[in-house]
Amino acid sequence: MSPKISKELSKHRLERAKQDLEDAELLYTSGSLLSANNRAYYSIFHTMRAVLALEPIDFKRHKDVIAYFNQYYINTEIFPKKLGHKISLAQSIREDSDYDDAYIASKEKTQKQIETAEELINQVEKYIEDFKN
Image (cartoon, rainbow, N blue to C red; front, side, top):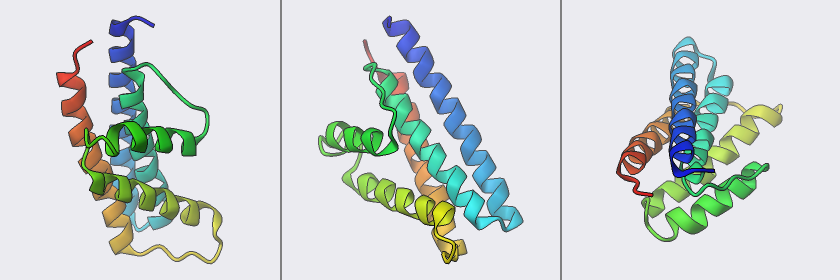
């Protein structure tokens, strides 16, 4: 894949992440917290994949995307380590929201999911713009 195509794919994935974030905010406002958690997580997931597209590398499984992102972007402090913890929490909350019938979503945790997605998007947007091939 050419560097130009990689950067375009990266930007495309980031736009998808922004749409997921908008959806999460709308769902949160309407009180659909479980669905808002899902969309906030997918915003985070697509944002990480936007970074990986610049290499270009990708994985089929979510856990592989997260592990790679943590190893090469969080542990190396390209992005702050605190984001790694927030991403792990987002994944856990999304899984609980989607698969645990007894899980009760809270407004506070859902708001933090949305804030994490927004924080990551802002940092990745700058990273993509500054990225040199």
